[in-house]
Length: 94
Image (tube, rainbow, N blue to C red; front, side):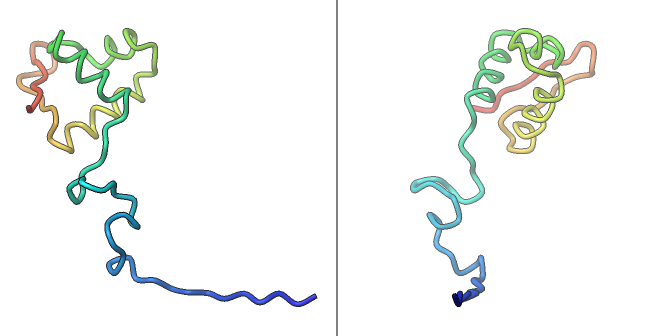
């Protein structure tokens, strides 16, 4: 039995938007938020002074998961921190 294997190399820059995993109507570099990230945003709207530990406890998830999602939200400029660690608060960009 013979098997023919063909390798095709494609330059990622030549792919169209839907082929690169972007949904139609979505801006380049913009990702859809997960339900967990949306829940974090809603918690921050209600309690802008909440800590990551408090969010983790309220959502019954690990601190590390909250930290990763919050870092993504900050990097995406959806949320930002105003003030210090103890008396600061989260600002949500609309």
